Length: 186
Image (cartoon, rainbow, N blue to C red; front, side):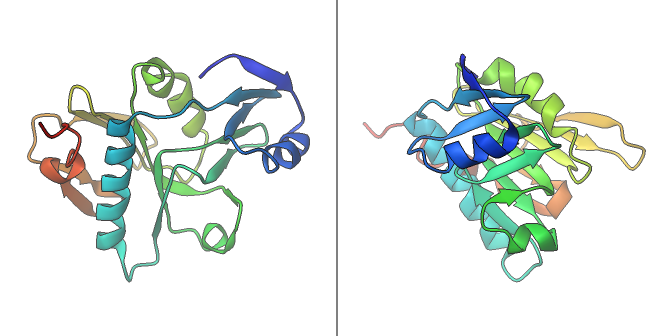
């Protein structure tokens, strides 16, 4: 996640961050600069957003990627790599989303531990969240955590499957489509 830059209130952070060229996440008064991604990261984000958007076209749900803010409670702003919301208030907002049902994080060596632990714990504070998926472009692992009707989170390792099942929005993306363009062409 990085080293905190400074401490602010949520309102002060939003005013400040909207004037910045770079993206920053916010948690309990601390501001963290987002680092630039690698080619493989950007490729997987684009592949997932495109394939999910194609499947959700005409539905009441929309896919967003990387540059959209998600507010978690009153003290946290995050930038998921990919998320889907079907919430009417979210679909009318221009700046801050509050009710994603699916969040996908594309892992990198620098963020993997944070995405697997603290960031997942933060996202679980969202009552709307039904599914959290981690995609590792380096190892081609795809792991999902799905919330049951009872509120328990169940782990599903899809790494050996032929497709990535996205049960929260009734979609599936083949592994070839998830990782299309990740390997550099010789």
